[in-house]
Image (cartoon, rainbow, N blue to C red; front, side):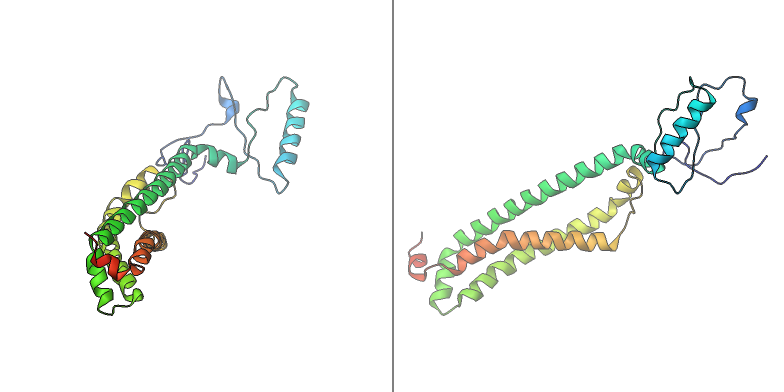
Length: 209
């Protein structure tokens, strides 16, 4: 008899459970058996040798479902990887929609402030200053979004940890990368309205209704 360390028995996300092992020669009936081999040889070469040994022992002995431990783990977390890929896809779509929404808000704001922008430029405001004014407004919107989104994401991170294997509930590098990606997306969405505002003709802007 002996004691083995805790391990995942049938799924990587399950909690270790109490099991005991018995020698297969003491079992009255064995429907199937699984063997684990450790080798430094390439997997294809090991699998070919396993099939030859199985045929040598008993030509009718099946040697099916031969795979590496990496393949087994990938099969076990297939659903998790699918959910992760779908989440990444929806996150990308959400980012694009957010960019379009922010672009629409900024473009509408520039149109509403056309007369104001014309007056500013008539009084000597430089195009760079007008562009900076619009971009600062966009940065305020970005700051409000990050200020509410990041705490909410951290509060819900434990849900992702419980549903996915190997996902930490808090990773500063991931949070920083996500915030940087959103900031770049917001700057890209706000740049075009800001650039248009900087090219407003003061005379036409003063006549704008």
